[in-house]
Amino acid sequence: MRLFLLMFTLAATVLAGVGITAVLAAGMDGWQPIVAAAAAGGLIALPAAWMAAKKIRTL
Image (cartoon, helix red, strand yellow):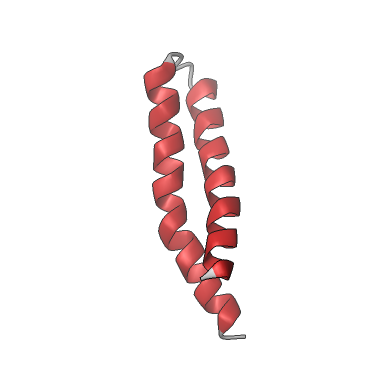
């Protein structure tokens, strides 16, 4: 569980940052698109961190 939480922290930060950067590069300013991109990054990070932690544990 600790590995998953560590992986989630890293993945959520990276994916939220990528989403926010993409939104800002697309010219969508305002708080709604930025918050939506950050939330989407956090949601995408959940299964990504789960799968990555599972793969690391099986090594």
